[in-house]
Each structure stands twice: as structure tokens, then as C-alpha cells.
Length: 98
Image (tube, rainbow, N blue to C red; front, top):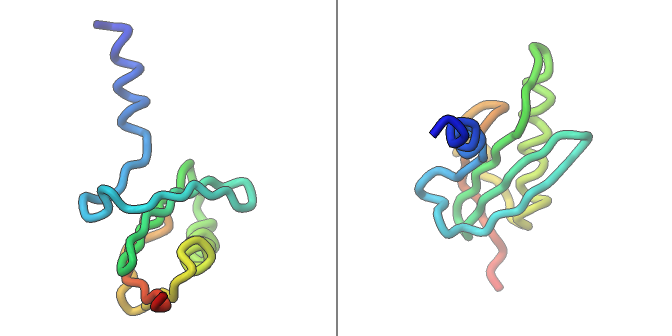
């Protein structure tokens, strides 16, 4: 039982999407030494930053996360729909019709 405790902590730290993104496409991205997970559908996106962020880094990280959205999804973010912070954010996207 004691050996399972560290594994449970590791599992808890793994990024997982919000329930609305279960089954969504997932892309792992690294930019400037930071790792991010991006889940998206044809209408919604979620970005999760991995790792610790120091005071003073949050605004830059938030901007980096916003910039990842069109790069990864190929869709335009509706910035008014964006919620969250430099750790996790969600928003609506508009993708070109195929």
C-alpha cells in the first residue's frame, strides 16, 4: 500500500481536461522551456500549463497560452469567451469551414 501512494500523487499531477473536453483532440506543446497541453473541438479549446510559475511570470505565460490557441488549433479564438488564468484557460474558437 505504501508503494502505491507516490503513484497516486503522480497520477493526480497529470494534466487532464475538463469534462467537456473528454474525447477532444489533444496536442502537447513546448515553448520556451514550458510544457502545455491543448485540448480542442471544433468550437472550444482548453490550454493547461505544466510546471511552477513564479510571481511576475503570469502575464507573459497567459499571453503565450493565448498565442498557442490559433497555432495549435488553426482556429480563431473568441477572446471575449476566454476564462481562466496562466495555469488553465478555456474559450470558444471559430474554425474555417472545410
